[in-house]
Image (cartoon, rainbow over all chains, first blue to last red; front, top):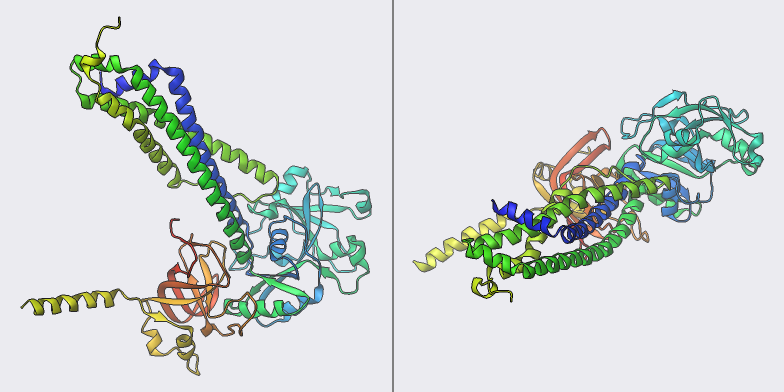
Length: 396
Length: 150
């Protein structure tokens, strides 16, 4: 009989206590795994879902609101800017591409975004590619003759059940201006999947206020400079005037990451407390088991088992508990993270791929085993020092 | 004899210390190194491929993982104290390994180290640049926490 077999037999001998100890380890580990995965996933979701454009131009106000609304389709739109801002940027020799964007209402919660074909264009520098899964892009219609054609993001099409050729509108006010689905996009793993796109002419005609406006409104303009070194100058120019603000989307996201990192630090402290409680629970479990077993240990010693063997058995028993708990915890943590990510995605939150193979799982698993060894150390020493003569005395 | 050994030891140590030092380039040097024909001087070109340190404000012109950003002598944000850089010689294009993780502060000067490149170069994603730092890392900013564990 090997040392490991004896340790496992001991575990089976107190099955309920062992199962509960492993479960507490599993719960602690799954909390660590789930919180790290979700925190990393949210950050990755922002990084993957961000725009390829270096500068975002909108009305004066909150840069965070502008980026969250225009890039991630969260929050409310910032006030309007005039179409002439877009025209000025288009004519600026420092600008390579300027894309106008007007944020509208929504259909079943999927935001309306009015833009031009440039929004979907495959420029050499773009990471994101747009492709049509079914149908075609909306037509570049004239301002006087809006086509009321809509292109749906992959999620918007799937969740609304709309197909090419379907007509739709939200609310009786808009019944006069139904949109026709002409295309459905392939998934881009970004907020564009949850968006309904149409032309600016359609947007202006659908909107009662803008219909009457001479200079048409926009929410924002996405800007790509010819040279990156022109960005500071462009940014400054847009910010010193009273109508507009220029925002680096990445700067806003980095500020959000700064806030998230503070939350991460608080969560890390709480997780450390949880791990400490688990460690104490494991220690108490192993300590009481060793005390109960003093007579058995003395018998083993009397039959020729060395002190080192006894020490090994207790340590292995403790480590086995954390191996089982660690494995369950890692699997459970992934499950909790998956459920959390699904809930976030359902509420339009950006979440990246949670299941990228990394060092997290091996490190946590190794850490769990080390904790097992640590918690089992004192009970193992206690077992190691068990005196045969003292503990083999007759029971009565 | 003992004095001679000490002198040799001291000389070796100072050589090592000197050898470990990374040259620091300033924006003033970079701007001054441009000639009328937009050619970079040989002095600045002699740093090509060598690791240098440049201190400046980070302008996150690329993705938020900071795999690319601009380093500028003036902050692009803040209370607009100074004239913004307008030329390519006043901005360094920084390419960092993915996952450069810092507590970003637009009003803080960061120390950035990387392999220096001078001369016009066109990048597929980020266009034309004059000065670049490759394989760069953000070393420190006074009082700011720098994460290097990712």
